[in-house]
Length: 316
Image (tube, rainbow, N blue to C red; front, side, top):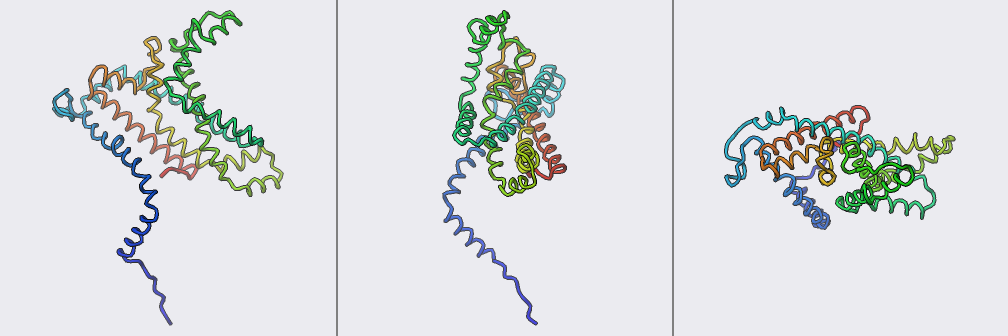
C-alpha cells in the first residue's frame, strides 16, 4: 500500500514564480505606481497632521504644534452652537441627497437597459453622463444666470406666465437644499448609472430566458432577475455613499454659500475652511475634521456590518 505525498513549493520556488509573473506583467505594476504615490502623498502622509487636534499650533513655531493640550479643542467645538448647526445641516443635506440621488441612477440604468433601439440608447447614455465633465464652478455659474432675479430665464417665465414676482433663488435658504440636490441629480445620474449598467450587462441571459419561459413579463423580470442580480453592486455603492455622508461637495456648497442662506448652507467642511484658513485656528479646525473622519469610519463600518448581516454582501 503506497502513501501519496503532496508536493509543496519551497519559498525559493515561490519567489522564482513571483519574479517570472512580475516580469511578464510589469506593465500592470507600472500602471499602479502613480495611484499608489498619489494615495501615499495626499491620503496617508496628511494623516500625521491630525496631531494638531491635540496640540496647540502657532504659526512659525513648528508644523506639529508647540504644546500638548489633549482634548481641549474637542471640548470647545462640543459646546459650540456653530458646530452643531453645521453638523445638523450636513446630516440633513446628506440624507436628502442620499434618499433622492442614490436610487435615481439605479432606476435610470434599469430603464436604459430596457431600451431596444441601440442608437437611441447610446445617444441617451452619452447625453446623460456629459454633465459629469462640466466643472462645478461652471455649473453654479449657469445656475446663477438661469435663476437670476433680474435676467434669469426661470424668473422671466414665472413673471410672464404666472405673474409671480422675481425670486432670488440663490440667496434664499428655503431653496438651497433643493438646488443642491437638483444639480447633483443633473450632474451625476448618468455617470453613476454606468456602474449599474455594467452590472446589468454581466447578468447571464439564461436567467432572463428562463424567466420568460415561466411567463414573466418585462416588469417581473426586472423585479425578480435584474434587481436581485445587481443587489451586491447596489449594496457596495450604498456603503460607500453612507461613508461619505459627512463629506459633501465642499466646492459646490462654498460657491452657493451666501450670508442669507448660511443658516442651512453652513456645513462641516465650510466650518473647517472658515475656522482654519479664514480665522487661522488650525488646531480647532483639525479637531473638527478629525471628528468628522471618525464619524465617517463608524458609518462605513456599521453599514458594512448591517449589509453583511441582512444581505450577505459587503465590501470587506
